[in-house]
Length: 235
Image 1: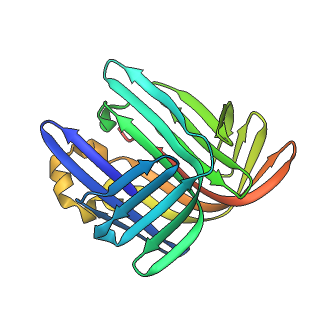
Image 2: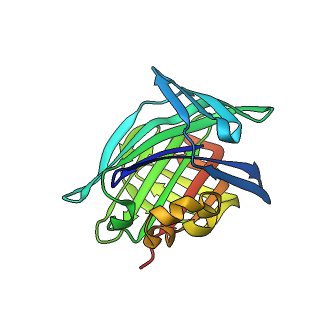
């Protein structure tokens, strides 16, 4: 689930999106509608009525907050609300339980003006471990990881593995969740945004996967799931 608020040039827009499915049958629904999101203590509730999706997330790890980018143009603040959580999600009449994740990203700089060429982001959860990583490349560079809620150095991040100080994540069997330029993956559901926002934003290309993962560290290994993506900013 994605809940977005955009305030720009006197215009306010609320965008909701839900991505669901299995290998070979993935669906993204996006609409100009508001999600109802609330956080009380270690609990997060969210509901996207337009998509018949709702859920509850109970934290199973400490919060982490970091300013990823800060210049005169503005700032990008990232808050990992739940690096791992116990989640229960309802889609239409189907209820699912498992491990989850929640974050909040706040930008005061226009996304199409970020000094970015490539962004790799991902998260891994298992009954034992959690790992989140950010690898930002361009005119401005930064990278870091959270291993079980604690910040650590990110040595390498690729489509197949993530290496940090103290752990290695092997990324195995995958299926695509989304692939293509934002104009094709998001805009068809909300054509009004295409008239509001500049074309350079919709030229951004993303690839997002769901994969099996195995985390290896000094005291053992654990198996779980990975959601990871690479985003390219085109000239």
